[in-house]
Image (tube, rainbow, N blue to C red; front, side):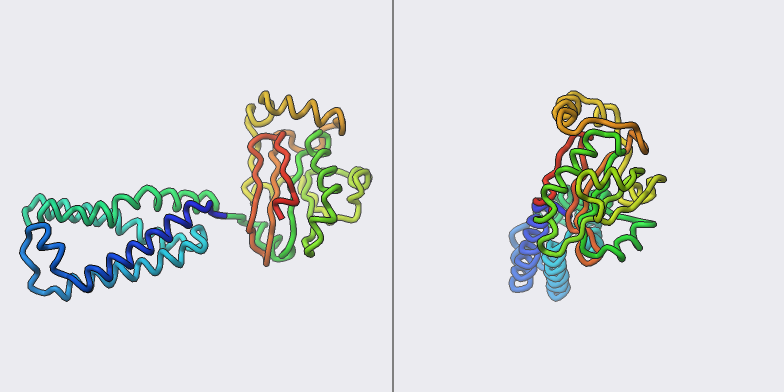
Length: 279
């Protein structure tokens, strides 16, 4: 899910483009007069550009509803804001445009380049589950999907205890809990009162990979914060033998209508998400 600042930037871009388009469409000669340039012979062409800019604004406002989903609109806008200033500089160097006219490129293009670029990067990084995840999401259309670490990990055991404690609240609105693990028997889950919860055994970590959950680095698995959290969790939940990939990072995803609407990706193995807040 895209952060709120992306939605606000796109909405601001939409409002700006629509306003600029209306202004230029109504007073097509004003900017040329201000820049000390001759008025165009065919102001209708300049008004047509104003119409196109205004229509782009409608697209940005709609893209603000879901920036990652509507990334093609952002991409088209980004390319326009990239190539527009290049064309202006060529015309200004050739003496056909006044440099003062470039103020348009600052407000229309340059100030939006970095935000649009960051939105595109975010959409690429959040391109979502692939491969085996498609059928999985189709089967679990409204669920909290929790990817666990190996069963011997104290944080995995802590996560199960947290889910068991919060289960009633999580399932209150019909959300189903689905646990994805690399290897653990029925008795292990029964210990936490979760024997009847749907579980997916994924020893090859195909779903982990499809959902973009990576293997952790040394800092994520053995950093100071992990040791502090590990000591506290160990006192309550203990540890066990390694069952699965000890480097695998966990995560949790809220699925609605077969689509991920919220997610929690652990920065370290010791992170402790609030599953109720996620739902």
